[in-house]
Image 1: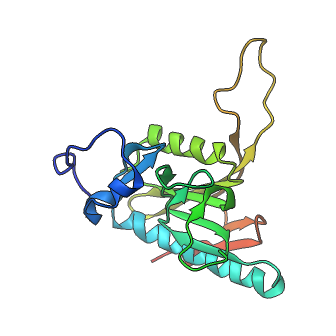
Image 2: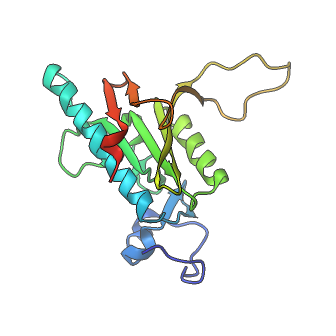
Amino acid sequence: MPTSDVDRPDLPEFMTWEELEQLPDEIAGEIELWEGRVVWVRKGPPEHQDYSVELRNALRRCAREAMSTDPEHCWRASTESNIFFGVAGKSDFVTPDFLVYPCPEQDYQDIRAADVLIAGEVLSPSNTEPLIEAKKARYAGAGIPWYWDVVLGRDPRRIISVRVWGLDTDHARLPEGVAPLHPANYIMVGEWTTDATDGIGFDHPFPIHIPWAELEF
């Protein structure tokens, strides 16, 4: 159950992963650490979680189909798993709604940003645009090559669109003395809407073909 502002305990502005682990799960599960700073991230409504799982399942199917024809590669799709930044330490992380990454060499291995291929967010009314844009910038800064966002609608409950963004490290021409705020940014490379397409079709990091019917529940 997501916490409300009233339920949130009075925590310090900065914490370590070890300190976060001492909190009750229902509190710790609402927190990300951004370079040690406590960032509260409310969980969305049940539809938010359900569509995250459906996207993960569809991506997992596509990954397995790709691996059946290309056994030299191994990919895994997960939901709400922490992405840790840097090569060590755990006090800097975010938790995307779904993600794709190469199969770890060991069980229960932490997922490092340098290994992530897709980070995805399901955008529901509980999300705020500033937080989503901030997380998107963190994914880009970490060099994650693909970012997906999934927009949900109401009446009827459904996915409205899926957009794929590719990492761009080349800067546009800017006036002299003007530098980009972030060294890397995403540019949209694909968009699929339920009223105009039959589903999602993208070829990176493996062939991905997902009909809309597969994402219904």
